[in-house]
Amino acid sequence: MAESTHNAKVSGKTCYCSPGHYLPHAAPMILLEQVCDIGVDHARCRVTLNDTGVMGPFLTLDGHLPGWYAIEMMAQTVGVWSGWHGRHRGEPPRAGLLLGARALHCVRPFFNADSVLDISISLLLQDERIGSFDCVIQQDEDILATGRLTTYQTDENEIFQLLKD
Image 1 (tube, rainbow, N blue to C red):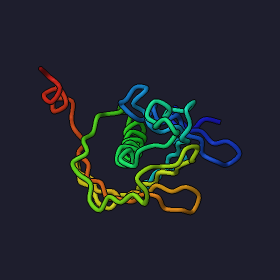
Image 2 (cartoon, helix red, strand yellow):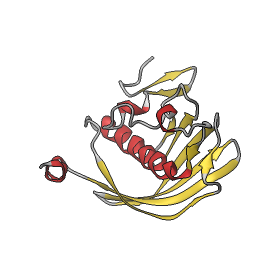
Image 3 (cartoon, rainbow, N blue to C red):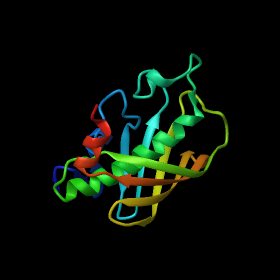
């Protein structure tokens, strides 16, 4: 039975829409495949690194994903969190800006081919427009990347000003 148009309960477990439902992006720029969990101050998304998935266009010839994609996967997970909350307020997904990343660390220079990555974000602080999030990318129990992102939620006028000729 559906709770809303944004998630449903199946056998007591919450099922979420695809990441694209919560992001103002379009393929191929959506780098996440699944929304696993969202709460008041956290979110977790997942992606599989193979040539048939959403990351296929971005993989190296040997199927690896360069480590610098970590920051965008983290930022999109923040975007999913923000978009989910916005949808529950009756708002469409809005563009946000990544202001910066601190202490961004990748264990290796790339993520291995055929890896299943879990991207988790935890809200540290937030006002009306600025948020700070601790982020972790894991494969099973192994932590592959960490960082702290600072984001800014634009309004429609600001994004228009940024994008106009």
